[in-house]
Image (cartoon, rainbow, N blue to C red; front, side, top):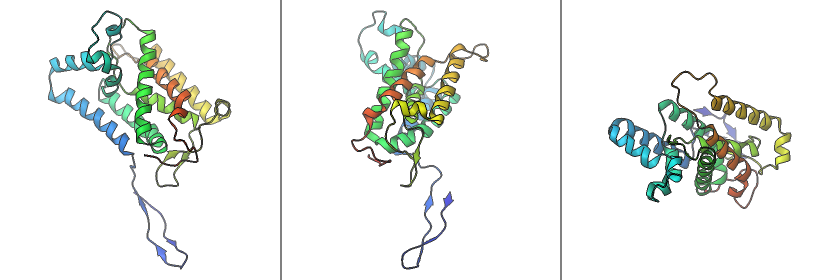
Amino acid sequence: MTEQPEREDEDGHRAPRRREPVFNLPRVIVAFIGICVAVHLVRLYVAGPAFERYVLLNFAFIPLRYTDGFAVDLPWLTSPLTYAFLHGGWAHLAVNMIWLAAFGSPLANRIGTGRFILFWIATVLGAVGLHFILHPYDAVPLVGASGAISGMMGAAARFAFRIDRRAGYAGFAGPVLPLGAVLRSRMAMTFLAVWMVVNLVVGLGIGAGPGAPSIAWEAHIGGFLVGFFFVKAFMPGKQDSGSRSS
């Protein structure tokens, strides 16, 4: 916990110190993290192998479901969204939740809860859409929130990672930058270059040991592209410095 030094008001009286919490996550971010953790706990400790197979078959995204004559049932309709709440292990879950807190919090603070949920849906669908286009006959279940989080990273680049903390919480500051301004931002371009290299290394499996799980890097790029090019569609009508709307 951090403390601000005492300040005097106009009459010379000392104002009380304002304490700021170390963790100040928006409620929508806490909710998403809570859902992902709860789902993982149920899969690992509450149910058995048969339930795990049921979860993957009905809630993970399986491209083959859409190209091999499967019936149009509820999982056919919902798995392009529900896959984002499943994770392959504790490490996968932990990394995604850390990045969700880091990039999702300033975005949620800026655009508000309702728009953030719509942004999550759009980036989740964008991620799974590109994965499907490139792997339409894949029978391997796709799980994880990485596509949506990559979309948040793409959105952050459109703000050139500018953060406004004046209101007591961190939110992206300023308007969504034109593409030309992003290209002129050293910070944004450095981040984009590093992000693309990391995804290329992951996609090619460089440095991965035998038996390492495959990474759906195409889904990362799909989500990133949606967040980068369409974040402006989720902005509130008034695009000032960083007003919160929820």
